[in-house]
Image 1 (spheres, rainbow over the protein chains, first blue to last red):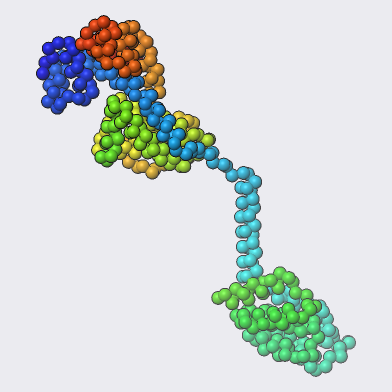
Image 2 (cartoon, rainbow over the protein chains, first blue to last red):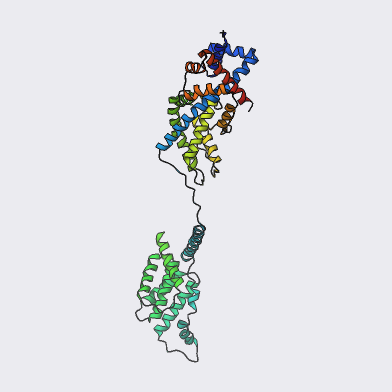
Amino acid sequence: MQPSNELQQWELIEAYCQGKLKPHQQAAFEQRLENDPDLRQITDDFGRGDRAIRMAVLEPVVQKAIQRELRHSAPVRVEPQRTTPIWRIRLKRVAGVVAVAALCFVSYLSFVQVDLRDYRDDVTLTYRYRDMDNATSPPDFTPQQRAFYRSFFDAQAHLANGQPRLAIPNLEALARNDNLRPYFRQAVYWHLLNAYLLDDQSDNAEATLKLLDQTTLVYPIDPMDRWKVWCQINLKKLH
Amino acid sequence: MTPEDMALYEAICSDDPYRVELATSKLVRRVRVIVNRIAAGNRGVGASIDDVVQETVLGVWQAMRSGRFEARPETPLDGFLYQVGKNQWLRQGEKPIVPLDLLHEVIPSPEPLEPERGYLLEEAFAQLCEDCKTILHWFYWEGYSMEDIGDRLGILDTAAKTRKYRCIRELGEILRGK
């Protein structure tokens, strides 16, 4: 298709630039473009101007449509992400340290056994017994009292040797006796419950602890040791 | 591109203001969802999503109209919208802290948009002769037919048409030089 005048030529160029030619027309026109550099230049320039002017005409339409659409939808605004305040970060760190320390403390209470050696040097119990062996001034012990002391110190020795099963009968026999003064009774209960713990008898240990708690404590038990036995009894019960 | 995407693309590229308007509204809704995702995954300093949406839609429209974005079946429209939206977000001074990989199939980042395009056209238009300015203004912005323009100029409509085409070519020549 060859245009017969200038207007037809322009109309052909416009139709080509706007993609309105039929495939065979387009192919024929492209063939002409290949053979005619001047026509190609004119077509390129026309296409550039045509696109620019059509865009300029439509841009207000697009902008108006955007504005209308945005106006009709709820406004969204991205708020800046707030950074965590320093005091909160520090508080978290402190809380973390406290939590770890608490965990270590509970582990210590639960797994470190009471050191009964601290209770072997109880002078309140031992001074009279020592005096008993002192030939110059023998204490006026009854045979029963003497047996009690021996039985108790034997049990302490068994516990120190890691033989709670040997200590338990002695201590149980002492605990059954009604004639013990409170101090000595509490010492017996304390050693007995530790012996039970060492022998994995948590129920008996718990019962003995309850007996100990029912009385006004006169025997000096370290509060930390008291918590240790409580934790260990409950831990063994969980198992 | 899905058939719906292709229909949207064709409408965006059409010269019918009504079609363009409807398509732009659809495009705004899609771009808004994408920009919201970008905003949600990035640290912001209070950027207005609406501003980013507006610039993104204009950029997409320009890229489609100018032929810089070619509609191809393997090119996902959402990927292109995401890229343009992310560029606009970054232009507003935002920096992503987490690279969004919501749309892995995104196409390579498109060329920078042309915010100065309108300015270039205005400048080129100013360089046209007065007759050309008048004819193009009457035809494209005032809505006169070529017959009316011919009457106003006292020439045949065919002569007016020819002059209009020459003016468009002249405008293209000026733009080529810029």
